[in-house]
Length: 281
Ligand SMILES: Nc1nc2c(ncn2[C@@H]2O[C@H](COP(=O)(O)OP(=O)(O)OP(=O)(O)O)[C@@H](O)[C@H]2O)c(=O)[nH]1
Ligand SMILES: [Mg+2]
Image (cartoon, rainbow, N blue to C red; front, side, top):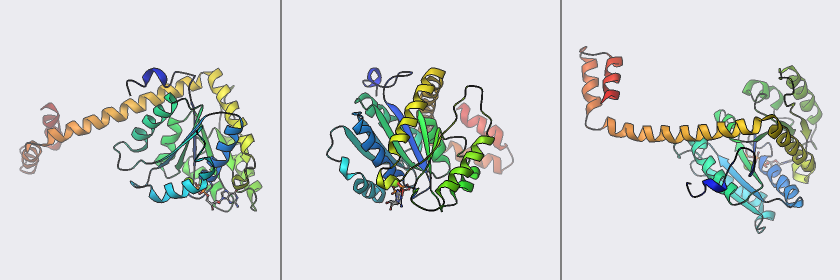
């Protein structure tokens, strides 16, 4: 990581990190594939990270994604990697930034990060990305779910995929009216709501254009620099917390915790005093 530092990051330059999140089956991998095709048409180098936050073995997802992205498998301008985040200490926030750093240093212009939206993970990905795309689809109750899950705060662009199915326009309308209610600062970014048919590649160019516009705005407004500092902060924090937890393991050894627990049970001490004693050791 130290050797990579001069080649990765910066406050504005380097790879543009795009997070794609949404419910299972909404079409994230299919969309990623379509976006890669469009980015390659624009002669950009692309990295793809598919992060599975729910499983320590992303075998199934990996196989599916390989099939969906097989047309790019032999393209030297595309690097695709599936990762499981669970089982890594610190989850998405620890494992993913390091992979992003490597891809950035390797010269990717854009890195697409696909994560299934399951609770915390989509918020984590939004904290990692320069631009976050939230995918929805008709018939999944996604419009209403969106409000509940708090995804209205994290998207820099919303994409209603599977627009070949009934109800796409309705999801789009619902989403637009919900977004219109959100308060935005003067000169703030207004997330567009786009429609795609990822399986046909329809709408991919518009999504890439929206990403470009958001990047230009973020660079201009200073938001990009703020996000990158925030990303580095959470990265340092995750590594430090992991180190603390490891150190905790050595604090816990030598039966000190057992002794303190006995003293609490015996009424000689209380848990707060005991915790202070443990940390003071
Ligand atoms: N009709 C239609 N089907 C689509 C479209 N995009 C994707 N699909 C299909 O939807 C299914 C799920 O697509 P994926 O791309 O695997 O979805 P995902 O969000 O990556 O799924 P997970 O990674 O399992 O959460 C596949 O069968 C796709 O072929 C679309 O625009 N229209
Ligand atoms: Mg997928």
